[in-house]
Amino acid sequence: MEYEKRIGVTTWPCNRGRTVNRLMLVAAITLVGLSSQAQKIWENRTGCAIAQGDLAPGYLFAQKTVTAYVDGDAAIFFENRFAAEGALWVSFATAASGPTGVKVNDAMFWGAEYHFLKPSRWDPYVSLTPGVGLVSVAYRNGEGVVMRTPYELAPLGSASIGCNYYVGSIFHFFVKVQGVFGQVTSVMPTSSRLDELKFTGGLAFNLRLWKPKKDAPKQKGW
Image (cartoon, rainbow, N blue to C red; front, side, top):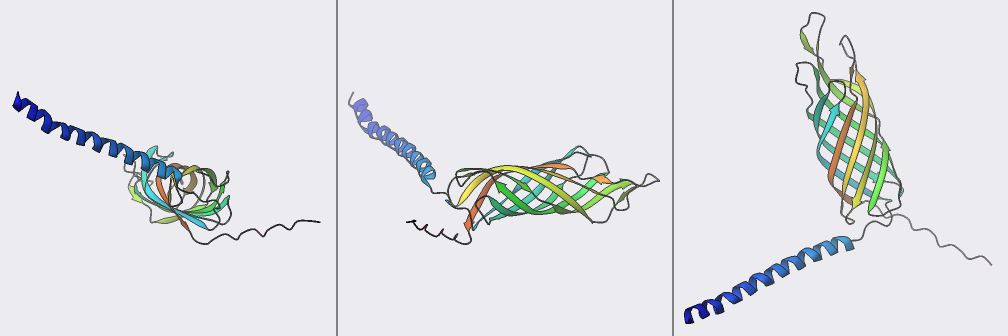
């Protein structure tokens, strides 16, 4: 009996300690969540820049295949609702299952974004970004031999729709869908279409490059 009592006395503080640790963990998680909600976001986007990079999938309609890219995007706000955007896409998986098709499909885009809402945590937007692609395509010549074009520049057009969610002034989450259209001709018997849907999403970072000018105080009339 004494042994059982001793066991009870010695194990009870351990159980209590575990309970306290669990409560402290729950409290810490709660505080982190509250602090993230309490973080300030930009009240004026003018002069702010955002940068993001990720691995992004796509779908080429002409050859009906899934593609993969390393993508980097950046944008600078010149006004609350307008931003200049630039993006670089480097392909690393574009080949179809067969011997022919688009083998390299790197691209660079630049253009403008329009953001629908005033600065808030939710930030939906659209963008128009023409660009240029660096493309190489495998094809069959008139004798049925598989040939490959040299790297060629191809004009591209694109439009995007996306949404940001600002956790604070330092970083935000984003999703974006981009439609691309264009074609490459080169020495092939027929042109090869580059129409594609690209998908991006993940974590992006924010940086203020300059402070916006404050509006002059309005003078009261007599």
